[in-house]
Image 1 (cartoon, rainbow, N blue to C red):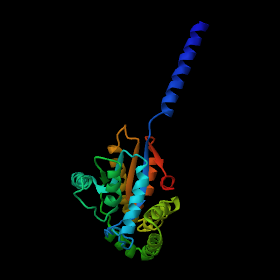
Image 2 (cartoon, helix red, strand yellow):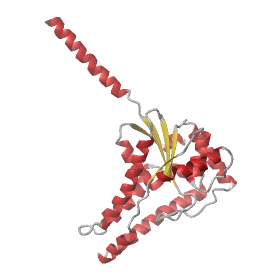
Image 3 (cartoon, helix red, strand yellow):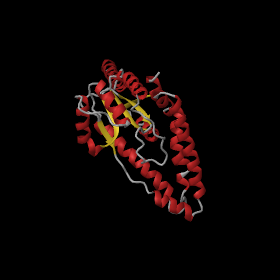
Image 4 (cartoon, rainbow, N blue to C red):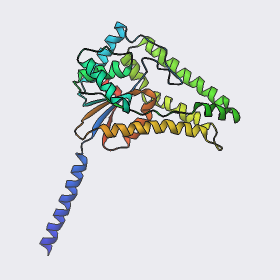
Length: 271
């Protein structure tokens, strides 16, 4: 009996060790989140940088240097802020660029995304965006009805201060330096706090117009997150995501809480 008990104890111990070892060695896809400024100033955001000539020789050289550094990751996929339903159009443009039949447009999606994809010899650039309309008019009307226009004014002051800061960073620094700056934890928090610190106050206790407005922003990012994890394959070791900086705090939170992934800090790559 003692012998049988010893064998049983050994087998149970072996099983626990095997399970623990399997959990520890579980493959995790590394994800590098790059929060960017919008190169072409699409006039879709409430606060935007002033235009800069990203096609100028100096900026083009900076983009070559940036993507040259990012190429060292040997990423399996590059994902960009382009609607999921525009994948076919994006495939066509990227294929034309890869074969020398298309000149990159003034967009970080192409200037960084396409350029990097070609350096990595990728067959496609993954589109993962999903747009949801946000009800600005309801926000303004609710703020007026509740004598909360001062909240929107305070939001404008802080938002413009942030954009002016980033404008100044861009004037004096390279694209790589700007990306390192705006992706610092305190800058990501600064962007997200504009939504949480101000907008959620509008209509609180009544129609919650502000909270609903912010929930639409979160919904968009949750949809983007869904597209990310749906397009990553088990064999992918490294993925680079290039998106507007305002999305990064939420996407970072979502990915940090999914144990299939390991987040890579941008500043550890752009040394």
